[in-house]
Image (cartoon, rainbow over all chains, first blue to last red; front, side, top):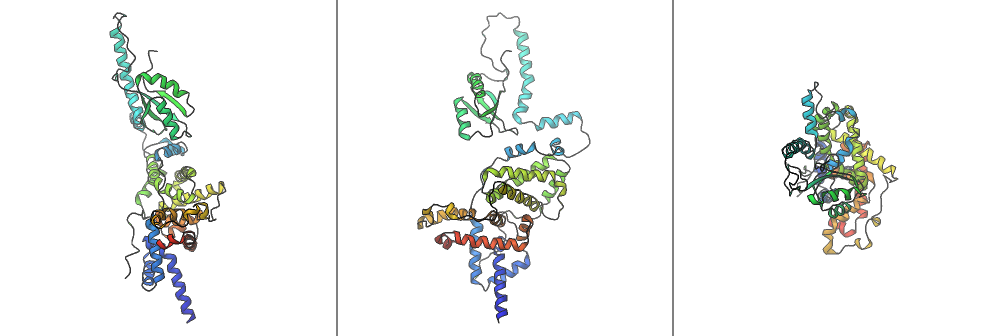
Length: 225
Length: 200
């Protein structure tokens, strides 16, 4: 009789320990049958099942929203050379054209546009210089604008904030300079800012003095020089 | 009559063998950065959640996560198919988390006190507030468990891992997993305000 009580108690204890995974449906078939059979006659374990179901459904805390792009960019520099070198499966030596195309695809979208627009802007400037060479010096000289942009198009700056910069600090810096984020963060943790053309130079100067700014650069062609 | 219980829960990520993960690991071994990035991004949310719950130190989570995935990148060729890729990766994350906690002298086996987490007025919430506060109180009670107990809770309820898989991840016998869960349950009972326990 005593042995039977001990066995029953041991079976009860065994089932109690399995209940979390029973509720989750992650028990194997043998364990699940054992629990099923025990539950038919054990009120205490049935109450315990309800508790575990509540626990399962509680979803007690949502994780913080984290930026996988930024985290991956931080890890990338630490990856072993074999992984850092290639972005494709290993294959026969690629042609220089394929390599160039691969490099091109690997760049951030804004950088690709910058590269693409540079020769266009240079070519247009060259044409303008040639055509304008014989004109009188009295032709009104307006403020400089890249020829590929309309007069109202905001100037673009690329900025890298210090990792310690808080959101409120970034917000203050942006507001103080009339800038807004239009792209980013890129893989290099940079943001592209848009600034009214007439404020661009001042904003560039001012942002260089901010301690929370690690790098600031204009994406516009340099004036005249 | 018994309610229908013990069935898989669709919302919970089931830790079935994932052939895609194995294929990604093989491509990582071959030096495929894109495969590694795909693997990284697919594990980022799950590892983030696991590490946040286990460590209670949000400032360390990304560092530990990246240390984990760095080991995956460096040792992908050592993945031996004896366990699921997820088990292998979570085991690395678990060890990295333990090490990080020890480095900052955060005891991994010591339970905390709910008094550290709840104000005195929150021990007996008013009836109308009970339901609203219950989830938070439960979350805070789990916070008061030791890192090892939190890991078992998180892997069981929120990562959908079975006890054998958890034993593999934590590098301990199955009986230890069961015992940790049992004690975590008992500890939660003791930590929760009486009214909250009734609601559960």
